[in-house]
Amino acid sequence: MALLSISCFLLANPSILESKRRRNPTTVLASAAERGGVAPRRNRSGMETRISLVLALASQTASLSQRLFGELAAETAKYAFPRRFEARNLEEALMAVPDLETVKFRVLKRMEQYEIREVEPYFIAETTMPGKTGFDFNGASQSFNVLAAYLFGKNTASEQMEMTTPVVTRKVQSEGEKMEMTTPVITRQSGERDSWQMSFIMPSKYGANLPLPKDSSVRIRDVPRKIVAVMAFSGLVTDQDVKIRETKLREALKNDTQYQLKEDALVEVAQFNPPFTLPFTRRNEISLEVERKIN
View (cartoon, rainbow, N blue to C red):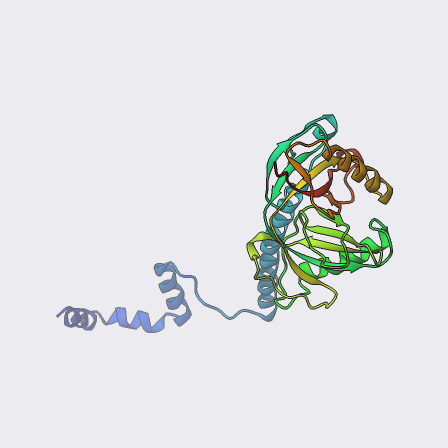
């Protein structure tokens, strides 16, 4: 009915039909678009298309850069705002460690020179170091790079894993080599061959489901629960320094009434800080595995 009424109105007013025939179709389209709140469509030039593409790519790059910057800032904050262990003296009060994952442990006993910890199980990636010393810069750098390559993608899953702390240097016997250490990089000495091994502690979220290394020189091992005596110290670590501090810890443990050294206990040296850390704020730990005395 409405359509019939409109038709009759137009037939009764032929001037309206004539005026619509004379109007420019583009004008009619533009007018309709304006009434509908939509801009008229037109073809883009090649230059406009290229500019739009560049702007879109720039927007995506900016968004990605913001995300990467945020991740970088978060990682930097772990070093800029480190955490501290409970200090027993002024030297320890100055020490700080990056806010990275470390091996979980429970303090069983605190003494003036050392503390006794129960360390939870964890997994490591290890490689044999070149050279005959545990703290040789070139040998340590080569081994670190091999393990870092595994950690950051040179594995069967091509997966980048998080860094943990600390770096641990450990003596080991070549026979029945039993891997026990704390947090993520461990260097250990094989007595008969006078060689060392370096290890990274693996992030706990993987458990036993770690990707396999592509480099055959990298091995994955699990470290069982253990009890250790730990002595903290600051500064840079040298082989001679390790020998002196190990002797001091062994002597101190002789007077402990609850714990004793395990048979064939070998020293571990944990280094928690990155190379650029000031020596007096670095945290290092020497540890020896112990067991409860049987009364």
